[in-house]
Image (cartoon, rainbow, N blue to C red; front, side, top):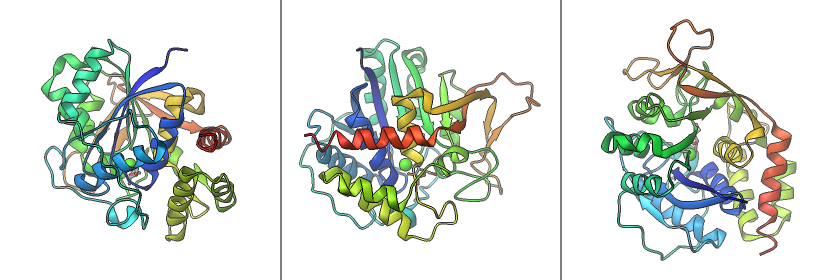
Length: 312
Ligand code: BDR
Ligand code: CA
């Protein structure tokens, strides 16, 4: 089986952690590296967390390249109230001593895209700053990237404001650059992620798997569930893990292609993804939008991948 070359661009992050451990466990993926961005918490923490999560999975081969600490044109709006001050809830992971790659995330993305001759996938589970920067600096990168799967956006709901989802709200200018780039982009938004949860019972099963990884995932899920959530109180929401699952098994989501614009001004709708569902703008569709998720398949995939850590 030819493995799929992939970079994970992330700001861990409670749910980023589960997404990363899923990817690290998948036999289908050839992880070329992890790039970090300031988002949920500051870059220093997202970068250290990414390294520590990789250590937890035992993947000594995967390196981290640090990216931008701030959005392209704005100050960072973090989500530390959701993810904890350092991004891992109240957990302290065992520290990795591995060094970071010297190159900036955007240069690492460019170099890796060039090396993979049109086959590179990018999973983005944080603000899109690094990807937009790579596109701005290296226009020839566009045909080199096979596709981008991005946790972000929504059709008419929000989780930071009534209009906007966090990853897009944090850096709307970057999202617009990526969506309009001509690269094949799929957004996995709140419409499909909020109903995709791990509930208390399922989390007990995860904990009972007994590996270090499953304990961390179960602790982070409990951390999420112990907070009052207006979104889906029935469980821990799997925003980033659902996007990761789609890269591993594309039958998990149904998508439709629409023209998606991003509100970049500072008004009430900042960061909103305007999905032209009824094709009123007459603009050429630019983004695949996740419309429906198969949650049973998602849970089966998640459990299967977590089980592999028990065998190690
Ligand atoms: C997204 O925002 C972050 O807080 C989560 O990690 C996820 O990537 C959900 O809106
Ligand atoms: Ca995230």
